[in-house]
Length: 193
Image 1 (cartoon, rainbow, N blue to C red):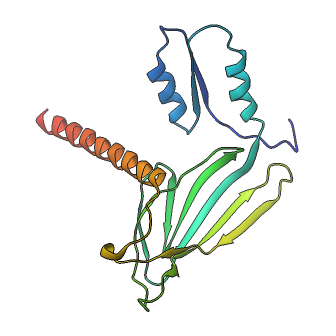
Image 2 (image 1 turned 120 degrees about the horizontal axis):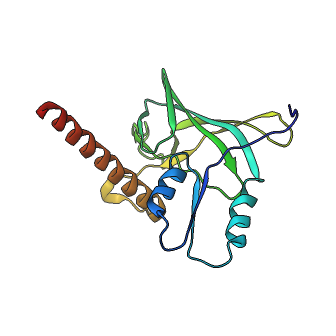
Image 3 (image 1 turned 30 degrees about the vertical axis):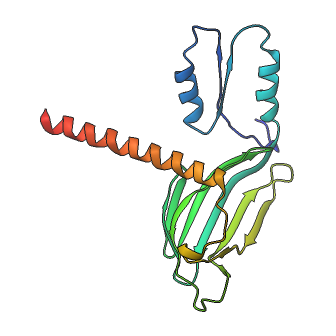
């Protein structure tokens, strides 16, 4: 038994050559937010080194984010596939382990209550509590943020949209629609049998 060692688990899959089943290997990696690398041929050392090197750089373990909306704001749903736990007026999302250079996007559909004073351009929407285990020190770390958003009526909006966020939302909504269509088709098939 090894003690005092922190580990992180991240599925990694590789496809090699023209006959590789890339879709299957990508699905295996995607099942738990892992990585997939397709190698056309030749030397595989660089691909293995790049992927396996990332396993040594876990920066946060057992990471969770608790969001407590304020002022009547409401979190309606989490669009991506993280575990979500609701509790009264808060939600907690478990994002598990985080690796150096890795980005994890949490995209929510929310209902924001307009500011009490319409002249307020920025207002706080929630308190965000970030909790994790530091793999180097094995200490529990906690941080709190109080993000603000700018409010503008649709006809007077001077706020530029962030293309990367819009793309993530479009992809997640598309996937959600496909999943709903598949469930509906399966339900219809069950009724017909």
